[in-house]
Amino acid sequence: MTAPLIPPESQVLRIPVAGPYPYNTLAYVQYLVTREDLESLTISIAAGQIVRETFRSPSPLILHGFDSTDQRQKRVEHSSTAVLTSLAASDAEPFTAAVDSIGIDAQVDDESGQVFFTFSQAKRYVYSSPFFDKQLNFAIRFSSWVLLYEPRPEGPDERDKARNLHARVPVGPPPVKHFGDVGGQ
Image 1 (tube, helix red, strand yellow):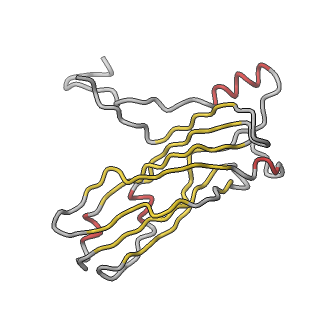
Image 2: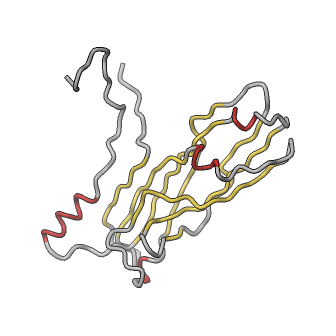
């Protein structure tokens, strides 16, 4: 039996493409939004009421060679999905939890070149237990295909440096340590 695949917490893969203009890169972005990331948005709600919270989520995608004056880098196109994962809830109280919508426009931070996505989460609690929120845990797995523009390196030395910037997060289960292992032996 093989070990189950455990997706990395985040990864960015870049593929050179020839358009449409002005885009020259297709990036696949995947990352996890955890409960701790959502904690700051918790608001009190009445039992049975559906509440939607919208927030801006920083992705691990940062445009290489970002120049805030280059209009080609200010806009990205994306096709994205988000799903609830690692759901842990009490079976004693009904609830609703969902990723309600993903914003059409992704934003590029003017200073860092980091891409941000906007999405909404919907919640509904049937009971008014003050402890119920602590019993509902989940993470959101966000994945996106993003068309963007990044300047291409000029010479071979710069291309080699750029290749190292495209490193992937390893996929697969973490290494298994056995009782008695000392110093990785």
